Image (cartoon, rainbow, N blue to C red; front, side):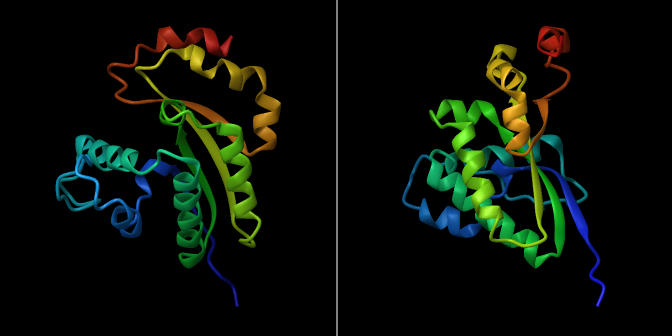
Length: 172
C-alpha cells in the first residue's frame, strides 16, 4: 500500500503545546493565556499567532518540558503520516531559562530514533529584539550543529521592527 508522505515546515516548538501540558500546569495562577480564537480561521491574525506562540513560553522552562513537547510532536507526525518536519527553536527562550541547545538537540535526536521513517531538522530562531552576538557560538561551531540536525538560522519576529542591517555581521 502506498502511503502519501507529507511534510510540515516552519513549526514553532513553542506553539506545540497540547492540553496535557496545560493540565500539568493548571495550578499556576500567573499563566499568560491566549484569547479564545479559532486557530487557522478566517480572522486569524499575526497577533493571534503571537498570543498562541507566547502561551507555550509558560511550559518550556526546563529540559524535561522541551523533551516532552518534542516527543508529543513526533507522535503527531506519526499519527498524521508526516515524514519530514522542520522545527523552529527559539534560542532566546532556551537562553532565558539557562538551558543548553546542544543537550536538547541530542535528546530530541534520541527520541527521534524510536520513530521510523520520520525525519526532523531544526532551525534555530533568534527573535529580533536579541543581539546577533547570541548566534556567535552557533556560527563558530556550525558543523557540529549541522551534525545535530540544524539546517538554518532564522531571525524571527515582526519584520518591520527587525532592522536587518543590525544582523549583517553574522553572515560575513
